[in-house]
Image 1 (cartoon, rainbow, N blue to C red):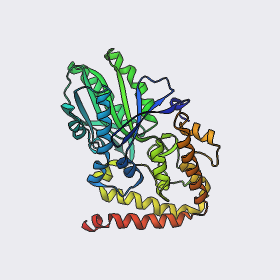
Image 2: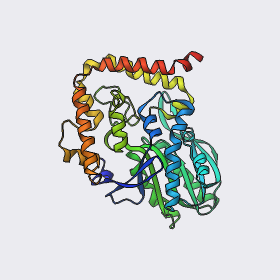
Image 3: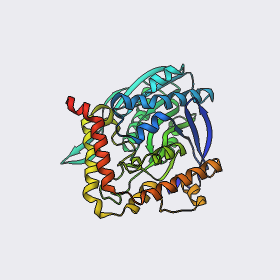
Image 4: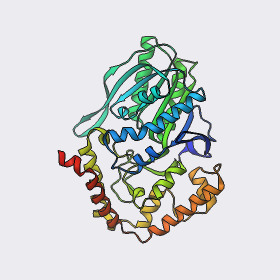
Length: 366
């Protein structure tokens, strides 16, 4: 388990329109961490077939509902500044959802952070484009994917330096993310840096869609996962709604990554198509190299079976409704039992057929 997640648990914080809201409690946090679950983001993160503008629309419901709830709780002011980290940040409908909730966007700023590649190796990150104003006492709102966190750390420290140079100040930050556990570690590290420059800095509110996921540390049992990039459940905190949604589908749990490449899904669909089909074709090739039981346990996030009490602790569900969690526990056990007879090659063939059919109109147009 990640150090920042030890002894933590999900606490229901509210329900706004179509979105369930949980707060992560039990840790000695400098900041506030929430997980939200909505039909649109559940579908997005369980289905790589959701592409293009549909991937943007899928995030609108959860984002708008959470901003409405935050406004009611006086966690966001009437005016905010949005910073977009190109290009992944363009997937997040922050401006539209602020508008829906009567939150005025005072400034829209941009920063580009690109990989520096030399001799086919990533050697660093480079800020290549910015449009940044630095008013006083702002609430800075950002949306982006957080995996390793290197891009975000580079951008945030650049923003802090530019605000100091230009004489601006930041009161608080609200961050929406499809993100991993590294986000918490990073934000806990960054908050003292904010307060060093602006002692009045109130902290960061970080809002995760559907869960605080974990990035692979190695290539996984299949040998083809991407370390520090691909998201899965192990050692994370997943909303019970998303867990149930995924397990209601025979195959969704076994996808390569929760989100794949968010930018490619929106803007470079042929690249996304290639990544998904390459994964499932790769799974077929290496299917004899691992047991299905090991694959299932890796994707569920723990060795099966476990007791109900251990399952609650592993998933940070100790404070949630016991009856509902027991039903979900049984549902998950039934899924695991049902999966014992599955063939990984059959799953791969089925997913390849479904995915190619879903994207055929787009690929044919190319």
